[in-house]
Image (tube, rainbow, N blue to C red; front, side, top):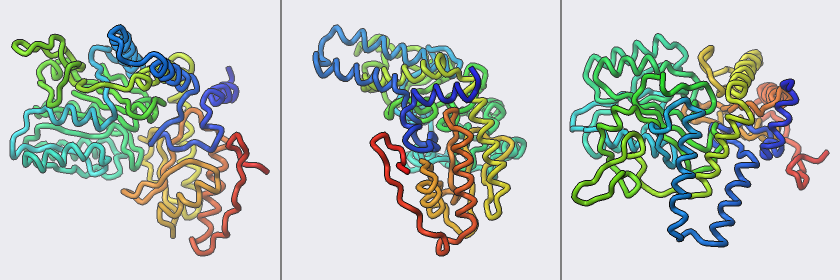
Length: 410
Protein backbone atom coordinates (compact mmCIF):
# COMPACT_ATOMS: atom_id res chain seq x y z
CA UNK A 1 0.00 0.00 0.00
CA UNK A 2 1.44 3.44 -0.90
CA UNK A 3 2.48 5.47 2.13
CA UNK A 4 -0.30 8.13 1.95
CA UNK A 5 -2.98 5.44 1.69
CA UNK A 6 -1.43 3.46 4.52
CA UNK A 7 -1.34 6.54 6.76
CA UNK A 8 -4.95 7.39 5.90
CA UNK A 9 -6.04 3.84 6.73
CA UNK A 10 -4.21 3.91 10.07
CA UNK A 11 -5.68 7.28 11.00
CA UNK A 12 -9.19 5.96 10.46
CA UNK A 13 -8.45 3.49 13.26
CA UNK A 14 -7.06 6.21 15.55
CA UNK A 15 -10.06 8.53 16.05
CA UNK A 16 -8.15 11.08 18.15
CA UNK A 17 -5.99 11.97 15.14
CA UNK A 18 -9.07 13.47 13.52
CA UNK A 19 -9.84 15.83 16.40
CA UNK A 20 -6.55 17.77 16.25
CA UNK A 21 -2.98 17.45 15.04
CA UNK A 22 -1.79 14.84 17.53
CA UNK A 23 1.73 15.76 18.60
CA UNK A 24 1.91 14.66 22.24
CA UNK A 25 2.34 10.89 22.31
CA UNK A 26 5.30 11.61 24.57
CA UNK A 27 2.63 12.18 27.23
CA UNK A 28 -0.18 9.93 26.01
CA UNK A 29 -0.61 8.38 22.58
CA UNK A 30 -3.87 8.01 20.66
CA UNK A 31 -5.81 4.86 21.56
CA UNK A 32 -6.73 2.55 18.66
CA UNK A 33 -10.48 2.13 18.24
CA UNK A 34 -10.23 -1.64 18.50
CA UNK A 35 -8.39 -1.37 21.82
CA UNK A 36 -11.12 0.82 23.23
CA UNK A 37 -13.77 -1.62 21.99
CA UNK A 38 -11.96 -4.50 23.68
CA UNK A 39 -11.78 -2.57 26.95
CA UNK A 40 -15.44 -1.59 26.71
CA UNK A 41 -16.47 -5.19 26.09
CA UNK A 42 -14.47 -6.41 29.08
CA UNK A 43 -15.88 -3.68 31.31
CA UNK A 44 -19.43 -4.37 30.14
CA UNK A 45 -19.01 -8.06 30.88
CA UNK A 46 -17.74 -7.31 34.38
CA UNK A 47 -20.67 -4.97 34.96
CA UNK A 48 -23.16 -7.58 33.80
CA UNK A 49 -21.83 -10.71 35.52
CA UNK A 50 -19.48 -9.34 38.17
CA UNK A 51 -15.80 -9.92 38.83
CA UNK A 52 -15.91 -12.28 41.79
CA UNK A 53 -16.39 -15.71 40.24
CA UNK A 54 -13.39 -17.97 40.92
CA UNK A 55 -13.70 -19.15 37.32
CA UNK A 56 -12.63 -15.71 36.12
CA UNK A 57 -9.18 -15.80 37.74
CA UNK A 58 -7.64 -18.25 35.24
CA UNK A 59 -8.99 -16.08 32.45
CA UNK A 60 -7.50 -12.97 34.03
CA UNK A 61 -4.15 -14.73 34.27
CA UNK A 62 -4.41 -15.70 30.61
CA UNK A 63 -5.01 -12.07 29.63
CA UNK A 64 -1.95 -11.03 31.64
CA UNK A 65 0.08 -13.73 29.87
CA UNK A 66 -1.16 -12.33 26.57
CA UNK A 67 -0.11 -8.79 27.55
CA UNK A 68 3.39 -9.94 28.55
CA UNK A 69 3.77 -11.87 25.31
CA UNK A 70 2.61 -8.83 23.33
CA UNK A 71 5.19 -6.61 25.03
CA UNK A 72 7.85 -9.22 24.31
CA UNK A 73 6.88 -9.36 20.64
CA UNK A 74 7.14 -5.59 20.17
CA UNK A 75 10.26 -5.13 22.29
CA UNK A 76 11.96 -8.37 21.14
CA UNK A 77 12.36 -10.26 24.39
CA UNK A 78 11.43 -13.47 26.12
CA UNK A 79 7.97 -13.15 27.75
CA UNK A 80 9.44 -14.74 30.89
CA UNK A 81 11.57 -11.62 31.31
CA UNK A 82 8.58 -9.25 31.24
CA UNK A 83 6.57 -8.06 34.23
CA UNK A 84 3.44 -5.97 33.99
CA UNK A 85 3.49 -2.67 35.88
CA UNK A 86 1.30 0.39 36.22
CA UNK A 87 3.79 2.86 34.69
CA UNK A 88 7.43 3.49 33.83
CA UNK A 89 8.02 4.93 37.29
CA UNK A 90 6.38 1.87 38.83
CA UNK A 91 8.91 -0.34 37.03
CA UNK A 92 11.89 1.87 37.91
CA UNK A 93 10.88 1.86 41.55
CA UNK A 94 10.45 -1.92 41.56
CA UNK A 95 14.06 -2.47 40.48
CA UNK A 96 15.77 0.45 42.20
CA UNK A 97 14.15 -0.18 45.57
CA UNK A 98 15.07 -3.86 45.43
CA UNK A 99 18.83 -3.39 45.07
CA UNK A 100 20.94 -3.95 48.22
CA UNK A 101 21.59 -0.30 49.06
CA UNK A 102 23.71 0.83 51.97
CA UNK A 103 24.28 4.34 53.34
CA UNK A 104 27.04 5.99 51.34
CA UNK A 105 26.35 4.08 48.13
CA UNK A 106 26.26 6.08 44.88
CA UNK A 107 23.84 6.01 41.99
CA UNK A 108 24.51 7.83 38.73
CA UNK A 109 21.94 9.42 36.48
CA UNK A 110 21.92 12.19 33.87
CA UNK A 111 21.28 15.90 34.20
CA UNK A 112 18.33 15.49 31.79
CA UNK A 113 16.22 12.89 33.62
CA UNK A 114 12.46 13.07 34.03
CA UNK A 115 11.08 13.40 37.58
CA UNK A 116 9.58 9.94 37.12
CA UNK A 117 13.11 8.55 37.06
CA UNK A 118 14.59 10.93 39.60
CA UNK A 119 11.84 10.28 42.14
CA UNK A 120 12.98 6.74 43.04
CA UNK A 121 16.55 7.98 43.44
CA UNK A 122 15.67 10.95 45.61
CA UNK A 123 13.62 8.66 47.85
CA UNK A 124 16.73 6.50 48.29
CA UNK A 125 18.74 9.57 49.21
CA UNK A 126 16.19 10.63 51.80
CA UNK A 127 15.58 7.17 53.20
CA UNK A 128 19.03 5.57 53.12
CA UNK A 129 21.53 8.34 52.54
CA UNK A 130 22.41 7.16 49.03
CA UNK A 131 24.43 9.69 47.04
CA UNK A 132 22.67 10.67 43.80
CA UNK A 133 25.03 12.14 41.21
CA UNK A 134 23.75 13.73 38.03
CA UNK A 135 26.22 13.24 35.19
CA UNK A 136 26.36 16.14 32.73
CA UNK A 137 25.65 14.67 29.28
CA UNK A 138 25.09 18.02 27.59
CA UNK A 139 22.14 17.74 25.23
CA UNK A 140 22.82 14.01 24.84
CA UNK A 141 23.58 14.38 21.17
CA UNK A 142 27.23 13.27 21.29
CA UNK A 143 27.38 9.55 22.20
CA UNK A 144 31.12 9.66 22.84
CA UNK A 145 30.69 12.60 25.22
CA UNK A 146 27.92 10.75 27.07
CA UNK A 147 30.02 7.62 27.47
CA UNK A 148 33.08 9.60 28.54
CA UNK A 149 31.05 11.45 31.17
CA UNK A 150 29.78 8.20 32.70
CA UNK A 151 33.22 6.63 32.46
CA UNK A 152 34.70 9.52 34.43
CA UNK A 153 31.91 9.33 37.03
CA UNK A 154 32.59 5.62 37.50
CA UNK A 155 36.11 6.37 38.71
CA UNK A 156 34.41 6.14 42.10
CA UNK A 157 32.28 3.02 42.74
CA UNK A 158 28.56 3.20 42.03
CA UNK A 159 25.91 0.59 42.69
CA UNK A 160 23.69 1.57 39.77
CA UNK A 161 23.16 3.81 36.76
CA UNK A 162 19.68 5.05 35.87
CA UNK A 163 19.40 6.74 32.46
CA UNK A 164 16.77 7.38 29.83
CA UNK A 165 17.04 5.71 26.45
CA UNK A 166 15.57 8.84 24.85
CA UNK A 167 15.80 12.12 26.75
CA UNK A 168 12.37 13.65 27.30
CA UNK A 169 13.90 17.12 27.03
CA UNK A 170 16.06 17.17 23.90
CA UNK A 171 14.91 13.94 22.25
CA UNK A 172 18.46 12.58 22.07
CA UNK A 173 18.85 8.80 21.89
CA UNK A 174 21.48 7.90 24.47
CA UNK A 175 23.99 5.09 23.84
CA UNK A 176 22.48 2.89 26.55
CA UNK A 177 24.14 -0.28 25.23
CA UNK A 178 27.54 1.35 25.76
CA UNK A 179 26.45 2.61 29.16
CA UNK A 180 25.45 -0.96 30.00
CA UNK A 181 28.96 -2.16 29.12
CA UNK A 182 30.48 0.48 31.41
CA UNK A 183 28.11 -0.47 34.22
CA UNK A 184 28.93 -4.18 33.99
CA UNK A 185 32.68 -3.49 34.01
CA UNK A 186 32.26 -1.34 37.12
CA UNK A 187 30.00 -3.84 38.91
CA UNK A 188 27.00 -1.52 38.67
CA UNK A 189 23.42 -2.30 37.66
CA UNK A 190 22.09 -0.46 34.58
CA UNK A 191 18.43 0.58 34.79
CA UNK A 192 16.90 2.24 31.72
CA UNK A 193 13.89 4.55 31.49
CA UNK A 194 12.17 3.65 28.23
CA UNK A 195 9.36 6.19 28.45
CA UNK A 196 10.23 7.94 25.17
CA UNK A 197 11.73 4.95 23.36
CA UNK A 198 9.42 1.94 23.82
CA UNK A 199 7.37 1.80 20.64
CA UNK A 200 8.95 4.96 19.22
CA UNK A 201 12.33 3.61 18.09
CA UNK A 202 13.60 0.09 17.42
CA UNK A 203 14.59 -1.70 20.63
CA UNK A 204 15.81 -5.29 20.94
CA UNK A 205 15.83 -5.89 24.67
CA UNK A 206 17.47 -9.30 24.40
CA UNK A 207 20.49 -7.68 22.75
CA UNK A 208 20.65 -4.29 24.48
CA UNK A 209 22.98 -5.46 27.23
CA UNK A 210 21.39 -3.59 30.13
CA UNK A 211 19.99 -5.01 33.37
CA UNK A 212 16.49 -3.55 33.52
CA UNK A 213 14.24 -1.57 31.18
CA UNK A 214 10.99 0.10 32.29
CA UNK A 215 8.35 1.33 29.87
CA UNK A 216 4.89 2.93 29.85
CA UNK A 217 1.80 1.56 28.16
CA UNK A 218 0.06 4.84 27.39
CA UNK A 219 2.67 6.66 25.33
CA UNK A 220 4.19 5.28 22.12
CA UNK A 221 2.65 1.83 22.69
CA UNK A 222 -0.82 3.44 22.47
CA UNK A 223 -2.26 1.54 25.41
CA UNK A 224 -4.43 2.74 28.31
CA UNK A 225 -3.13 4.76 31.21
CA UNK A 226 -2.25 2.77 34.31
CA UNK A 227 -0.36 0.08 32.36
CA UNK A 228 3.33 -0.44 31.75
CA UNK A 229 5.95 -3.16 31.61
CA UNK A 230 9.33 -4.00 33.05
CA UNK A 231 12.04 -6.14 31.47
CA UNK A 232 14.68 -7.53 33.84
CA UNK A 233 17.74 -9.55 32.92
CA UNK A 234 17.13 -13.11 34.06
CA UNK A 235 20.20 -13.38 36.27
CA UNK A 236 19.43 -10.14 38.08
CA UNK A 237 15.76 -10.99 38.53
CA UNK A 238 16.39 -14.44 39.95
CA UNK A 239 18.96 -13.07 42.39
CA UNK A 240 16.69 -10.29 43.66
CA UNK A 241 14.11 -10.33 46.43
CA UNK A 242 11.69 -7.57 45.44
CA UNK A 243 11.09 -4.71 47.87
CA UNK A 244 7.36 -5.01 47.18
CA UNK A 245 5.64 -8.36 46.87
CA UNK A 246 2.17 -9.85 46.97
CA UNK A 247 0.22 -12.95 46.10
CA UNK A 248 1.04 -12.82 42.40
CA UNK A 249 4.77 -12.42 43.10
CA UNK A 250 4.98 -16.02 44.26
CA UNK A 251 5.04 -19.31 42.42
CA UNK A 252 4.15 -21.03 45.70
CA UNK A 253 2.54 -18.87 48.34
CA UNK A 254 3.40 -20.81 51.48
CA UNK A 255 4.23 -19.15 54.78
CA UNK A 256 6.90 -21.69 55.72
CA UNK A 257 8.44 -22.15 52.28
CA UNK A 258 7.46 -19.30 49.94
CA UNK A 259 8.81 -19.52 46.40
CA UNK A 260 9.09 -16.36 44.33
CA UNK A 261 8.28 -16.61 40.65
CA UNK A 262 11.31 -17.00 38.41
CA UNK A 263 12.33 -14.06 36.27
CA UNK A 264 10.69 -10.67 36.07
CA UNK A 265 7.25 -11.75 37.26
CA UNK A 266 8.41 -11.67 40.87
CA UNK A 267 8.27 -7.87 40.50
CA UNK A 268 4.50 -7.99 39.95
CA UNK A 269 3.05 -7.27 43.38
CA UNK A 270 -0.46 -5.88 43.00
CA UNK A 271 -3.58 -6.42 40.95
CA UNK A 272 -4.44 -4.89 37.59
CA UNK A 273 -7.53 -3.35 36.03
CA UNK A 274 -8.59 -6.16 33.74
CA UNK A 275 -10.06 -4.00 30.95
CA UNK A 276 -6.75 -2.12 30.84
CA UNK A 277 -4.75 -5.35 30.60
CA UNK A 278 -6.93 -6.39 27.65
CA UNK A 279 -6.59 -2.98 26.01
CA UNK A 280 -2.81 -2.91 26.46
CA UNK A 281 -2.42 -6.30 24.79
CA UNK A 282 -4.75 -5.27 21.97
CA UNK A 283 -2.83 -2.05 21.27
CA UNK A 284 0.46 -3.94 21.14
CA UNK A 285 -1.01 -6.54 18.84
CA UNK A 286 -2.45 -3.83 16.59
CA UNK A 287 0.92 -2.12 16.35
CA UNK A 288 2.77 -5.34 15.58
CA UNK A 289 0.32 -6.98 13.19
CA UNK A 290 -1.86 -4.27 11.66
CA UNK A 291 0.51 -1.30 11.51
CA UNK A 292 3.96 -2.90 11.37
CA UNK A 293 6.60 -1.60 13.76
CA UNK A 294 9.50 -1.21 11.28
CA UNK A 295 7.39 0.96 8.97
CA UNK A 296 5.91 2.95 11.84
CA UNK A 297 9.23 3.69 13.49
CA UNK A 298 11.05 4.52 10.27
CA UNK A 299 8.30 6.88 9.17
CA UNK A 300 8.09 8.69 12.53
CA UNK A 301 11.86 9.15 12.73
CA UNK A 302 12.05 10.42 9.16
CA UNK A 303 9.25 12.93 9.76
CA UNK A 304 10.81 14.10 13.04
CA UNK A 305 14.19 14.71 11.45
CA UNK A 306 12.61 16.56 8.57
CA UNK A 307 10.62 18.73 10.95
CA UNK A 308 13.74 19.55 12.97
CA UNK A 309 15.48 20.65 9.78
CA UNK A 310 12.54 22.77 8.71
CA UNK A 311 12.18 24.50 12.07
CA UNK A 312 15.90 25.21 12.15
CA UNK A 313 15.52 27.24 8.96
CA UNK A 314 12.94 29.60 10.49
CA UNK A 315 14.44 32.90 11.67
CA UNK A 316 14.21 33.23 15.43
CA UNK A 317 13.74 29.50 16.02
CA UNK A 318 16.38 27.39 17.76
CA UNK A 319 16.07 23.62 17.61
CA UNK A 320 16.97 22.09 20.96
CA UNK A 321 16.65 18.52 19.73
CA UNK A 322 20.01 16.78 19.53
CA UNK A 323 20.75 15.74 15.97
CA UNK A 324 21.55 13.35 14.36
CA UNK A 325 20.83 11.12 17.36
CA UNK A 326 17.20 12.19 17.69
CA UNK A 327 14.29 9.78 17.78
CA UNK A 328 10.72 11.01 17.37
CA UNK A 329 10.77 14.10 19.63
CA UNK A 330 11.46 17.61 18.33
CA UNK A 331 12.07 20.40 20.87
CA UNK A 332 12.54 24.03 19.88
CA UNK A 333 12.57 27.59 21.21
CA UNK A 334 11.27 30.82 19.72
CA UNK A 335 13.32 33.92 20.48
CA UNK A 336 11.52 36.38 22.74
CA UNK A 337 9.01 33.78 23.89
CA UNK A 338 8.94 31.48 26.88
CA UNK A 339 8.13 27.89 26.02
CA UNK A 340 4.79 28.13 27.81
CA UNK A 341 3.87 31.27 25.86
CA UNK A 342 4.94 29.77 22.55
CA UNK A 343 3.10 26.49 23.13
CA UNK A 344 0.03 28.45 24.19
CA UNK A 345 -0.06 30.18 20.82
CA UNK A 346 1.25 27.55 18.42
CA UNK A 347 -1.00 24.76 19.68
CA UNK A 348 -4.37 26.53 19.40
CA UNK A 349 -3.50 28.34 16.17
CA UNK A 350 -2.44 25.09 14.47
CA UNK A 351 -5.21 23.07 16.14
CA UNK A 352 -2.45 20.86 17.52
CA UNK A 353 -1.96 18.98 20.77
CA UNK A 354 1.59 19.62 21.94
CA UNK A 355 3.39 20.70 25.12
CA UNK A 356 6.16 22.77 26.57
CA UNK A 357 9.04 21.32 28.61
CA UNK A 358 9.92 23.77 31.34
CA UNK A 359 13.15 21.92 32.19
CA UNK A 360 14.73 23.17 28.96
CA UNK A 361 12.26 26.00 28.23
CA UNK A 362 11.28 24.46 24.90
CA UNK A 363 8.18 23.48 22.97
CA UNK A 364 8.09 19.74 22.28
CA UNK A 365 6.49 17.92 19.37
CA UNK A 366 6.00 14.14 19.58
CA UNK A 367 5.80 12.95 15.99
CA UNK A 368 4.19 9.60 15.28
CA UNK A 369 3.62 7.39 12.26
CA UNK A 370 0.06 8.75 12.12
CA UNK A 371 1.31 12.32 11.56
CA UNK A 372 0.90 13.65 8.04
CA UNK A 373 3.21 15.90 6.09
CA UNK A 374 0.38 18.41 5.71
CA UNK A 375 -0.02 18.59 9.48
CA UNK A 376 3.66 19.31 9.98
CA UNK A 377 3.48 21.94 7.24
CA UNK A 378 0.65 23.60 9.16
CA UNK A 379 2.57 23.60 12.44
CA UNK A 380 5.73 24.93 10.78
CA UNK A 381 3.73 27.77 9.19
CA UNK A 382 2.26 28.73 12.56
CA UNK A 383 5.68 28.58 14.25
CA UNK A 384 7.05 30.89 11.57
CA UNK A 385 4.12 33.25 12.06
CA UNK A 386 4.60 33.35 15.84
CA UNK A 387 8.37 33.73 15.48
CA UNK A 388 7.80 36.85 13.41
CA UNK A 389 6.20 38.57 16.39
CA UNK A 390 6.71 39.26 20.06
CA UNK A 391 4.10 38.21 22.61
CA UNK A 392 2.91 41.83 22.55
CA UNK A 393 2.73 42.25 18.76
CA UNK A 394 1.10 38.93 17.81
CA UNK A 395 -2.44 39.56 16.54
CA UNK A 396 -5.18 37.87 18.58
CA UNK A 397 -6.04 34.43 17.24
CA UNK A 398 -9.40 33.76 15.66
CA UNK A 399 -11.49 31.41 17.74
CA UNK A 400 -12.38 28.20 15.95
CA UNK A 401 -15.88 26.75 16.08
CA UNK A 402 -15.87 22.96 16.24
CA UNK A 403 -18.44 20.64 14.73
CA UNK A 404 -19.83 17.52 16.39
CA UNK A 405 -16.91 15.49 14.96
CA UNK A 406 -14.36 17.73 16.67
CA UNK A 407 -13.20 19.36 13.45
CA UNK A 408 -13.18 23.14 12.96
CA UNK A 409 -16.05 24.54 10.92
CA UNK A 410 -15.24 26.98 8.12
